Image 1 (cartoon, rainbow, N blue to C red):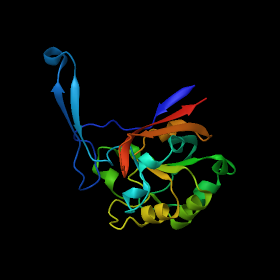
Image 2 (spheres, rainbow, N blue to C red):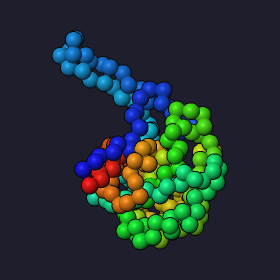
Image 3 (cartoon, rainbow, N blue to C red):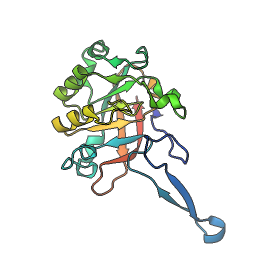
Length: 214
């Protein structure tokens, strides 16, 4: 069995969505002084590798804590989109070439190769996004979730986040953003665990996302 970590480490001065406050990690107790170490963590709910709930963009949408635990595990497939140029769309043909595996998966994860730009200015601009036909396909197939190694289905400079809203208005599912290491998952179905922090009324939360390959 091989386990692949698909998550970025949360740390101060990490990349965040424009306008989001960076996380703060302050040591409040130490082993030397208090016999134990404890850290005060201050961060927004959509930091680093994280999961969006419908409540992220819909006022009465489902929150992460309202999903059953099984929503966050299942069979996943990585769609290799690294051939797509900056600013271009992920098309339905990029999905169809995986044949029946697309229908067997419960999660579709889109590998644009953008995680190599993490911690650079390039990470924030011109990453490939799914087009409307792909979005309609995802909605129709009723996946448990989708995931990206970018800031998600909408461009970072798109203030209306229309794809987010269309997705979550149509179906209760999860959207995973800022993944990494997707190229290590191969082209076959594997087990995915995407476990967010469980907080009340959660519009989203950081998550440790792992691939488990037999």
